[in-house]
Structure formats: C-alpha cells, structure tokens
Amino acid sequence: MKYDGFLAHVRERGEYRDQNEAADVTSAVLEVLAQRISPGEVKDLASQMPGPLGQVLHQAMPRQAQSFGIEEFYRRVAERTDARPRTAQWDASAVLTTVADAVTGGELNQIISQLPSSYAVLFGKADLAD
Image (tube, rainbow, N blue to C red; front, side):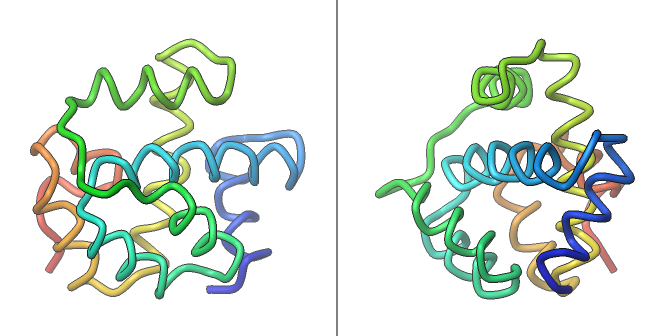
C-alpha cells in the first residue's frame, strides 16, 4: 500500500478533516505501538509500511519494548494528539485496522502475539489472523 492510499484509508475510517490530520494521528499511533513491541518487530513492521511511516516507526523505536496495557496505550496516543482517551481509542482503531490491511498476515500475527489479547480488536481482529 502506498503512503497516500494508507492515509486515505485512515482518513475514511477515522472520519478526519484531511490527509494532514490523518497523517498526524497515524504518526502518533505508530509511535506508541513502536514503544510497545520489540525493536526487531518494529523493524519488520517498518519494512512493510509506506516509506514515511517506516521512518516514524524507526525514529520511535526504543532499546526494548515497554510493557503497558490498552488503557495506557490510549492515554499515550491521547497525549500525542491532545485528545481524550476515548477519542484515542477511535484513532488507534482507524490506524491499526489500516496497518492490518497493509501488512502480511504473518507480520500481523507477530505484532499481535507481542500484545495482550485486548489489543487484537484495534487491528479489527478477534485474535490472530489466518
């Protein structure tokens, strides 16, 4: 999936005003996701994302994954977007369902397997992909 196409999907799913708002939300969600999964997985994900989004992931990558639950995920996204956690939940879902469409099923499984089961729904999955 190309960068503009990715942002168009996020914009449609999140009902954002324009591509810029979709890009800002996408960057915020990917930055938080990068902190939550292993550095190796961040690299694997970045390799399957459109160029600018791969760069966002690389820049946000910590030395090791941090362990935090779904509510903290929402809080961190909300902090980056100046939104409420409920809005951040909507934002995360818009971005991560698009990530699920953009990457291979194997990559998606690897990401989801590093997260508590409560995260799967953000990717539009009940659990692991087929």
